[in-house]
Amino acid sequence: MDYQAMLSLGLPIGVGLAAIGSGIGLGGAVGSACEAIGRQPEASGKIMQAMIIGAGLIEALTIYALVVFFMLYGKIGS
Image (cartoon, rainbow, N blue to C red):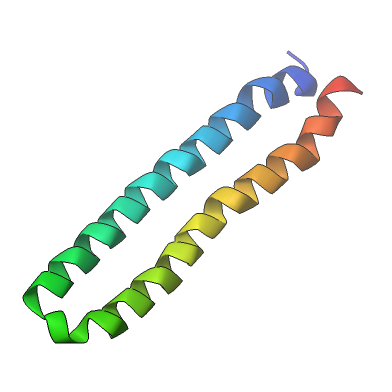
């Protein structure tokens, strides 16, 4: 099995795992933020701000995986 076949198998699996991890992380972050707002509604502004920053950092993982996918995708056909 050559490297092109390995890339053909590994790249979609890697992006899929990154998307699953991002989904689990975002679900946990949003769930915890909703729980925290329910306990302390007066702090909802700070909680939402921290959640949005955290969600952006979590989502960056998937974006980086997608960028790497497209960078290596060109090596499959050549």
